[in-house]
Length: 437
Image 1: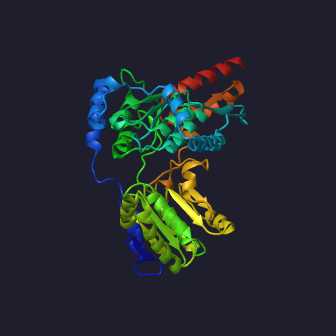
Image 2 (image 1 turned 45 degrees about the horizontal axis):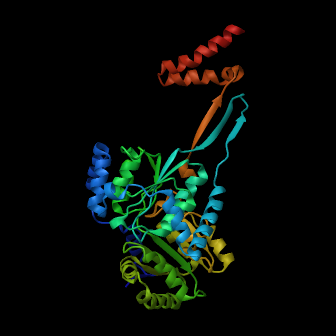
Image 3 (image 1 turned 90 degrees about the vertical axis):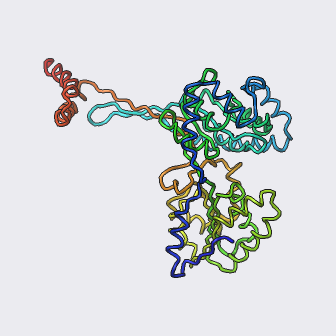
């Protein structure tokens, strides 16, 4: 059974702290194994990639081919069902429209000292998108990772996706066609991340690596960070639902299980001010679980990591929500109250307002990115955006008057820091200006 807590109980503070601090990441320590895989790829390049792919994915790159070409993706787009094709196209259009509004503008101004200042934004040259492979891969994840890169102006978008036993997901190929992916390599795991970061004889390195994966992929991203940029090191999925008793308990049960079905380490938490509603939701979860093809996974998650927490008011739940800093937060109440609650929320990856906004709509077609911080990282980080594929270059331009006004302060600071060449580079120009007077 999931954890049941009441905020009015004497032991609540300690019990809730235990819930917040519980570790749900995979127990296996894969760091050393990943370090060895990365070292092999750096030393041997394509040979190591081929060996790991044969071992882990039962796939012969030399015989079957390393790349999936654009023609295969175009054919997949044409051959999938019309409903799915239309759904992918709608999702892509909405994701692109939302992310277009994130693009920053260049800036330039001249300050009171006469110094011309500003910043120019530009896209990275190449981005790597990791897409978990096989028939269970998620086309929505590809769209969420590739489209912001395209909107940012990245010219080379490289997809890495294993094809275990040769399995290809037509919907993923169709999504790659829609998103404008430029290269698709049939490589997965930590070795794929290493190839993106360091390159091999066949695969040119990239500047940024994004996309979800298992513990090995997440650890590989952690280890190559600094050589390349990464989106984040993601952990198990999370949802927190804050709901009053006017909700349909069956809807709330489905919302909670929408994240529980991802993985046994996922977490689903309900805060409510209505004890009868809490009981009804728990009963509805039990009715829904046997009907899900993902029921075993969802039940393991719900029983190990789920929680139903009774609070005096929905407003009283908000400090607990901030402590959890969840990946997904639903505020399931009347729209005006949801907006008022949202105004008080400080930490959440993405927030879903009102009774008619389930988290699952955000996974697919709402528009904002579904790649979000987990493990309480919403306290200090944000979801994937166009900015993950861009960088800002500042610029400075001084004329003689500006140098005369601010140069002496630079000379003084250089002297204080005992960096004489710094001071000399400015002082030489100041001396030249004095000689002209």
